[in-house]
Length: 498
Image (tube, rainbow, N blue to C red; front, side):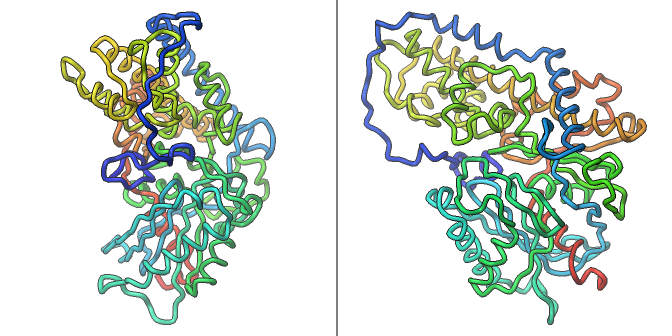
């Protein structure tokens, strides 16, 4: 399993944004300009810690603002609130589902295709099989038809390799759950209009179109006889997959390359769906919380990174807490320390100036270095950026990493508390005091112990001992793919046969 939820590299950091897929530059040494005003690296670090500080009152303000933005987003589209996208998932899998179902999980720089044989209440998941496919970088910036044709081709090849463990009923059309982890305005369980691409994608010709239609058309061009019976994002798939085994799961969070959260909402608490009839009286809402920005403790490095991104002014929460960006923020801090404060001496490799040359897996590896001389940090700095360092400089680097990661983990925890507060408003006191499970998936949460601890600590600090004892934060590994297949089954045209 790679560092990020959506990557597959054995070494753990295959995700590279668009500016990084290039040949490694020559190790050219540049002298720090003596014309710039000198600022001691420790002064820069002290200011960074102050600006990134997340004391309990600030975290509570973030949680309250998140709750308010959720409420506003449920009231109306296009206002000041979060998108709060209705998913039209109001019936989760019951365990009675039977048969062979597929899932396609598209949420980052790789996608997964998966098949699941379900055996009903007694046997549950009988067999699973999946393949992971890297998306060529040119397709992330190509046309809609090019991307979906590539996906459909690989799906067709995968479907052609069913073995004896999987049994398909004659006369049926294969059904697939489509996990599409980008902002979509969903209009039914099996259709949704793309609002915008995120996570470094900029595919032309898809925004404003039904992504299910895009996939169906591509599958038809490939001669693949398959029907999308459920469109979900990875958080909804994670919630469905986790709830299949634990009925107390009511919130799901993805913390990987990107981030999002969803939860189970009362239908009468969604004013913008007034008049909509739900068989369960509930619906899963995708918050799209990556778009949140109120009251966040931001620095010059965040603002510079945002300005240089493909979506400036957008996805600020995501750019503060998710795996795509944490390493890049650290790199920008170190670059300023080099240019203004002479960190690593006067001659430093130009490689440090390359955006995303330091990834979040790199800063994670640095924080796992418990040796006395921090030699692993030294080796990583040299290997990635051509930098020679001494022990004092490595300690400074370590403090920069911890400062950025602590802020990210604490803010993510505050976001979770904001969701729980919103659920409590409409539950007449049934949330806090009863067991509730928050299922979290994604390589950032799974593989970064410091980040995970900071998130959990902030939830406990904000809720207090009594309330936090009833909240279980559970790591759910690779749940979104299984969850999508389960939702394909629970929304199957053949479900009356289960």
